Image 1 (cartoon, rainbow, N blue to C red):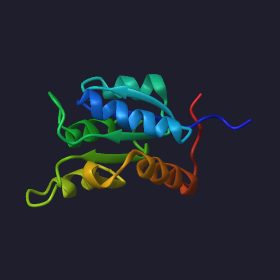
Image 2 (cartoon, one colour; image 1 turned 180 degrees about the vertical axis):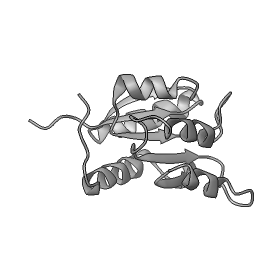
Image 3 (tube, one colour; image 1 turned 135 degrees about the vertical axis):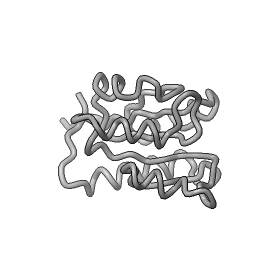
Length: 135
């Protein structure tokens, strides 16, 4: 029996976080939801997710900064990270900073319903060279 894929979702707005969590779960993903990225590295070590969905505009630690920190760890170095934000990321280099930090995609929430996000994550993980399912 194949293990369920796990996604760590970092979203500071409770209603938005629950909406995406539910949508990803309906698609068959196991989801751990956090409201900020302060303990991101510890959460990744504890949960061993297959992918991370990270908001850009988070309290305390912005998404790109959290991602840069995560990339310095062995467990976070190759983790697929999808940026999901209300912020379009154009004009101030935000998207460039996210990709420079190792994001695989940038999605605007207004254009990315939960079912579509789930499909994109599943497709990316399905085509990844070596994805180990979470336990």
